Image 1 (cartoon, helix red, strand yellow):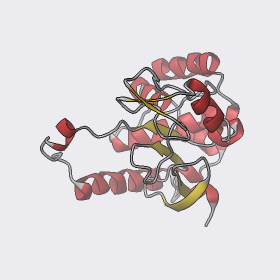
Image 2 (cartoon, rainbow, N blue to C red):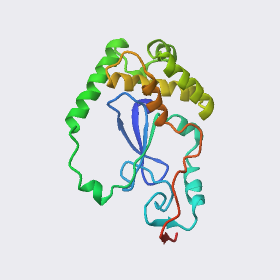
Image 3 (cartoon, rainbow, N blue to C red):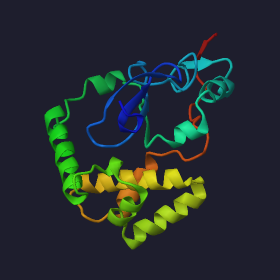
Image 4 (cartoon, helix red, strand yellow):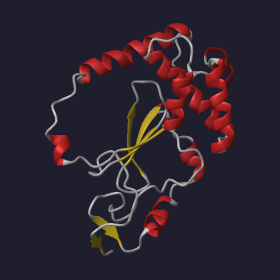
Length: 209
């Protein structure tokens, strides 16, 4: 299986534990969540970001743990999403109107739209030159991307990966042009080169490692 065509999951520790084909054509997705399933925690003990639990090692625990994943590796990950713990109130909510079938249909429609435009290629399979041709953002979107590239310190790879994600987001919206909101959303899914530690360690109970 080609690495660049895989959907990568990091679970419980910063190492590869499994991968599967990504139907949306995006390259790599990193998740972290409370249950460790297809995800990676913020720190070794899993307490970072958990309500009511704190690690005595504080931010150092998360820093040491997350430093095991190299910067160049993280730069190759298109989408990085923080998934908060599910609360009892969340469990009581009614199910979403959009089920798996509805979401899958939108994804397949977006993929078909991309292949029709790209001559049979998904957005992930385009070369940099091809991407520059089909992923031209509107003026406001291009200005936002340029400013974000400087502020976040995006590499050339990161810059083009943001464009790929934005191109796919516009396909999901049925828009031929990449708008500012698509660039903004693609950037929101990318941390750039800043530290990934975002958890609060001030809680009531303490977990002793």
